[in-house]
Amino acid sequence: MGFRHMKTLSAAAIFIFAGCFSSGSTDNKFLRNVHDGNTVIVKTLIERKRVPNINIADSTVSTALMIASARGHIEIVKILLQHGASTVSTNIYGKNAIDLAKEAHHLQVVEILNQADRKARRTQ
Image (cartoon, rainbow, N blue to C red):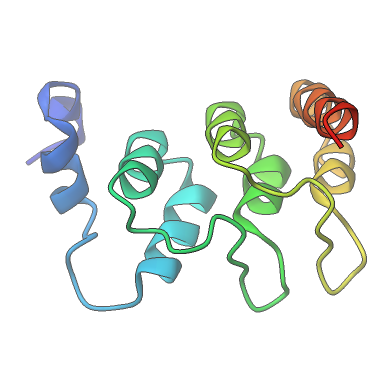
């Protein structure tokens, strides 16, 4: 199956195509798909409750939101925020999602994160 045919696949087919039912932890699959920018798969994993903790982290304690922010995956950032991802968590280098987005010059992501941070502060 070629990638040019992926537009016609259902979310379930994309889920299977990406190897999300193969061996390995769901957390690793989730973080890998966040890293790779696989928006449909990330959304499907979250909606199907396959992600036990939206703030799971990799070996550097970088959360899914940090990874998506550093890579400029705007839609994934929005999805993670909608599902309660923390904007204040820091990795082992003391960086949060906003810091990582700034370093990578993803200014639209920085603005989205700043808006989410302001909204969270207003509701406290």
